[in-house]
Image (cartoon, rainbow, N blue to C red; front, side):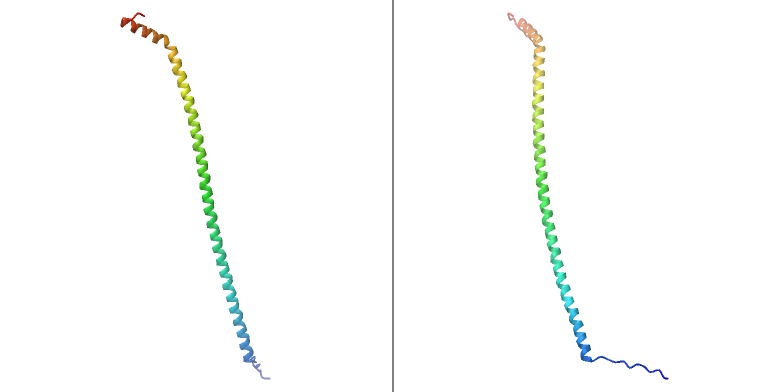
Length: 123
C-alpha cells in the first residue's frame, strides 16, 4: 500500500474573506475602544492632577494663615510678657530707690546741714 497524502481542502475564498474582514473589524473596534479608554484615563489623570494641585494650594494657604495666626499670638504673648516684666522691674527699681533715699536720708540731711553751715547758714 502506498502512502496516500491527504489532499488539503481549502475553505471557500468568500468565507475566508468574510472571516478575515470580521477579524479586522473586531481589531479596529478594539483599537477604537482602547483609544476611548486611553482618552478617558488621560482625562481622569488631568482631573486628578488639577484636584491635587488645588488641594495643595489650599493646604499651603491654610498653613500660611495658621502660621501667621500663631506668629501673631506668639508676638502678642511676648509683648504682654515684656510689658509685665517692665512693670515689675520698674516697681522694683522704684522701691529700691525709695528705700535707698530713706536709708540715706539722715546722711543727706547731715551733708545738707554742713553745707548750710559752710555757706554761713543758720541751720
